[in-house]
Length: 413
Image 1 (cartoon, rainbow, N blue to C red):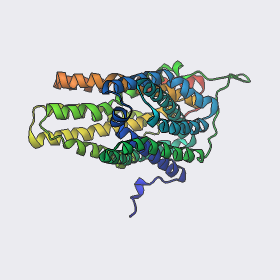
Image 2: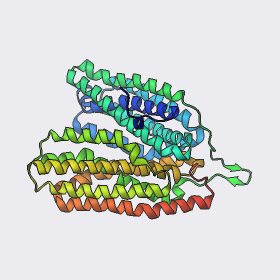
Image 3: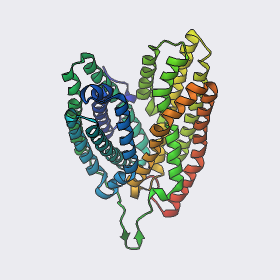
Image 4: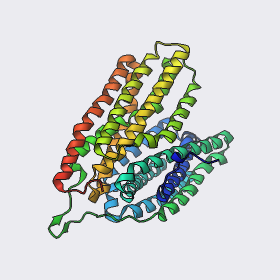
């Protein structure tokens, strides 16, 4: 059976990177599925300790994101990606040896830091290795591939949980480690990239200023982080709303997540078309904003509806949230490649990554409170937050663009 042509990346490099995405997402997805069980039953932690440890790791990651990302500009993106992938794999082999809260926090924080360095290096590599005209398309294929990998990984993790024995659960991080070792090998054999790295002085040309000195880019990263809060709606708020505020059956959740996965796999490449430029990315931001607002409107109505009307509105609302996810992702790739100084890609990707730190720190508590405590007015506030981010992204993008022109940064390449 052959897949439709549109689902297969057209070039060998795109196919190789898509396969790498499937493998790495399969590996981490299998572990993520059973983390709650592993940390409580194997490591012996309470739920409160697990949450606290994750918060500590998040703070460590926030502090180290930019410094770790700048390593790509010093040692090169591919070498950093390979080393990070190898160390990440080895750290997973250490999970069965962990006992107690302190060891858990230390390993989780180190792992999160290594993943941050590797993610930044990976993003720099992907931007640098593809020509401007195919870059966003390639990134869309890779994101679709990651969704496939996470789905397969969740199934593998779920199988281990279904077995339920201590040995089966302990085998999950070991499987993840083995797969990530293979992943590191795949990265090693990817083609090298050639790009200009910043120097203190090159004749009369001094190193270009860093991303933090580009206020438009910093503001745009924050707007992108706010728009990425669709993940909080998808994974936290809507499930809680469905269970506590609607009469829709709880089994609908499985169909919602399935719909999201199918749309992400089959529609991400199509949704990314046209986002190769700043103007195209701004168009994607507007579409993401409208989808965000429509989702809030539809789901807020389900507190008063019953039966099939509730089911249909929740499902359509989830579809539109997924639309916001697809268009926000497309705009992300366009902005982060077109509005970065390619002489400092690591630095710029680090600052861009800070925007994503907004989501887990602020929005789970804020959106849950607004939706579940305020009801329809709370959903209106959530929609307004999304609209504000989409609107402010426009002047921020133009300011970032003007900054790059002033410092003579190479455009999009």
